[in-house]
Image (cartoon, one colour):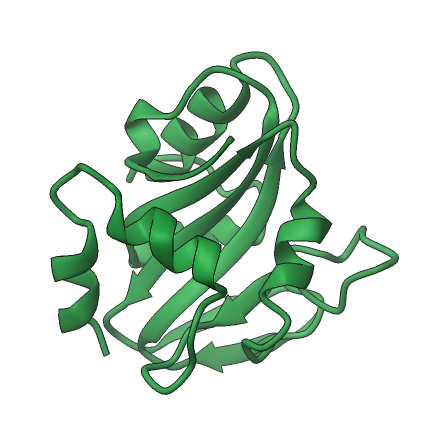
Length: 154
């Protein structure tokens, strides 16, 4: 199953996700090095293989108050989570590879332990297109911050 969901309503199955985060203000992010992140839409690919699966991981990502543990926590604490693409039993690196046409804004971000990927963070700018199954899933989402909210985000 591949779908675009409200993160707090994700299934409790294990899998991979791509979190869509709108950053409205510049921020300083730290991973292997520090870098200023410009406002925009970012897609972070991660996995949820622990207890509670996708539901538990994405609910944690959606919480405003949390202790930073992963690189993405820096973005989720300052940005707005717009939704998440989920792949039941999926692989975060495979999702990331599908987004290969999107630029990598920060090498090593979220993928410092991954031998295959330069980064698990992508920048989705207004002039780039998502793969068709990603767009179809997003447009088919049945929750409030679907397609309309994304059009207003720079």
